[in-house]
Length: 164
Ligand code: FES
Ligand code: FES
Image (cartoon, rainbow, N blue to C red; front, side, top):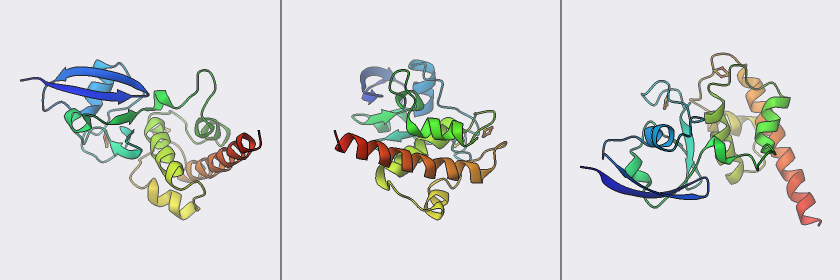
């Protein structure tokens, strides 16, 4: 029997009815059309499906949709500000941190959760936070460097905003 799911995704309120066994990734992709979140291994092993739930990185294939009732979800579609890319997205482009891009939305969301909590991470801290994110095409060093670059951009942005 379907149950009511009320939650926020990328700042918008949703009120849906879902089967109890429905996964969060299924609701995001199939009900809301947010296909940026990838569904790959289906076993919690690749992290391609990572989104943020109340600020924490979560594998959306490993959580039931009803577990996010009353919570706030952010997907890769919520990162950019209109046509303006998020500094993480721009840093991934500038540092060649992806090729096919299949793993990238999950990487970006895990990196966002990290930088929100730790704005100036060391390379080792980045590696720990990104552990488990599988990428079949890009060197992992480039991904770590992009995240460190994004941290610098975000700090500069904050300083600029503080100086206004
Ligand atoms: S699809 Fe969720 S961890 Fe691989
Ligand atoms: S960029 Fe292709 S799998 Fe990571």
